[in-house]
Amino acid sequence: MPGLIIFLNGTSSSGKSSIAKELLQILNEPYFHMPVDAFHAMRTRREVGPEELPDLLRRTWMGFHRAVAGMAEAGNNVVVDHVLSEDWRLPDCVGLFNARHVVLVGVRCSLEELERREQARGDRPAGLAAMQFERVHAHGLYDLECNTTTASAADCARQISAFLPERPTPTAFERLRRTLRPEPATPGQEAVALS
Image (cartoon, rainbow, N blue to C red):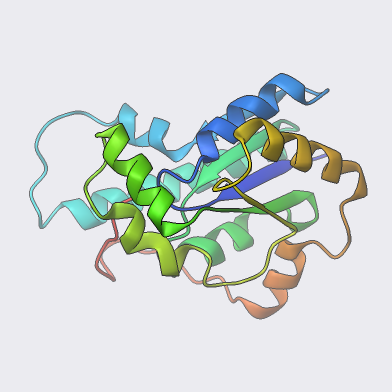
């Protein structure tokens, strides 16, 4: 039996990692938090030229998707912390993940609050959340949405936990699989939007 993937999608600084940490505290079964930032942090710190960077980042995201799929297929429950800011990412995930066992959660936050958080953090490029804001939720289809502008990470985690036993069928991923055609994600085909 594949593990369940709780797929948190939102812009940088929207609160996905905070929600994931809260979920790990309240969910009854064991879950692994797999944030894409952890994959970027594993990479060597050597300087990468601008001509290499798009391919490198794309390969990192592709590997991340396949690692998540592998963990879930081995029966592990996973909380994924993601940013669907490039057109190829969602179709790649839809093609890889067991669609029946994915809960797609939209993590929303107002642009003003995102910009405030981004500035307070100081570890993200200025304007990153604003650049991602329109693209991240463009597919428009979720099993569940939460808004961290007004709700705490703990409140969002409780909302997600309460939703899990009642999750509908078909899932958002099952419905997306009918409309999206996964295409091979080959490096170098498009300009990169930083994670």
